[in-house]
Image (tube, rainbow, N blue to C red; front, side, top):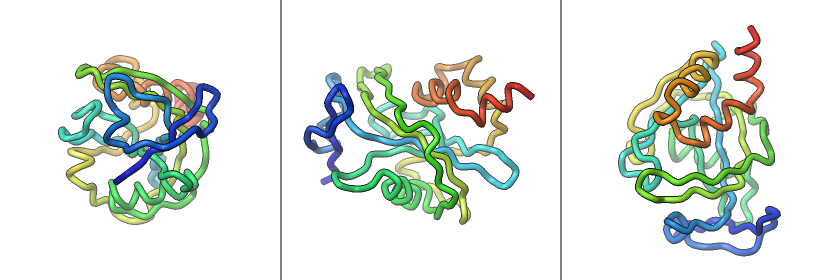
Length: 176
């Protein structure tokens, strides 16, 4: 059974809970991560969440995200989820936003409440996404993705919309 790391309001680990029991109408603060994959052309992989996902099914989001297991270093969890969700190996893993946190409620009432460090990486092998995780994917130019999140934020996960405003690789494109 997958477990997540529960956190105090100041971000300190205070316990663990089954992942399936945590995401609901009263989700406690817990540890997660987001990752953005870049290709050799500077594009960013965006994925559309599978319809069977508990929160935000069918919306476009970052390349992949997940939860570290109790005691698992976050960077190891990122690599593990890349293998599980996209069936790829990654390299050039870099921590972009170490303290990102958010709380959001999806249309069905499921709450996400996470301290969510944000990473970037490069895809080293071809993608073969798990259909249980990803129903569609695309490589996007950073400036076009940033513009799309501003024009139609409802089509994207709330964490992607917030992260686009904070990540340097989106801001640098806007300044060009």
